[in-house]
Image 1 (cartoon, one colour):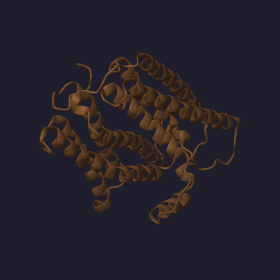
Image 2 (cartoon, one colour):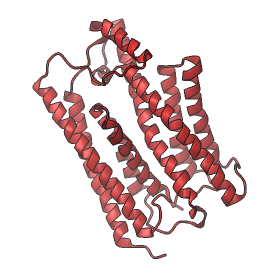
Image 3 (cartoon, helix red, strand yellow):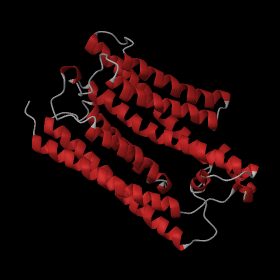
Length: 332
């Protein structure tokens, strides 16, 4: 099959363009976070905290930001910077999506047949998930933490993981590529957002504890003032993980069905299969602990972060270091 190099090169240019716009977005979101509105200190709003906790237990919806008493020029600049960041994030998502489309057209196939393409697709999934969520909620405070991992993913893809556009290896020429890998990409994008929310929860929760105990403030407390309250962050992380876990389950099952069609067995404890199952167990433990043992907050956040670390290990270490039947990185 002949490769259209002009389309492949244009795809690469769009990735460089996306990295440029994401860098601009990172700067804009940094300004927005630094000059944005601060949440009310917990020590001065104990009644409000009790009300929020009650509303969460009743399933009510609370706002993501607490209006400040006054609006300063700095806060106005922060809002404008946040708006610029959101516009740039949408542009970046379009550029990455365009790069994926052109990469696929250059080889006349789905554009996730190696680690380079999967990294690009994962970056697109993260930004697309963020943009979709921002349609219903004001998530400008989260923008900085989204741009950083996406920039890292694209940077690693275009430098360390880069692979020339080429036809798929025979083992990947199956309609299961569209089913299994696509669902995995969507899940990774959503789980990345969930892990970020869990990490920010830990920062907010510790800051709130320090305020309650009237201990010395730290630099992270300044960040926590720009975030939603810890309970809200915990709830958002839980909803994302609970919503995506069935899709991750389907992805693992689809992979097993594909394995039976390709190798004549549903499960062979190949390193990739093993770590996909370990990841599934961790996220299942996260949801089970919250539903039965009442594990909320810090312990649940640690489990969610552990699940995401298992995904990262499966992707980078298993694909590049450990040899198995799923060695399709394209780096060899």
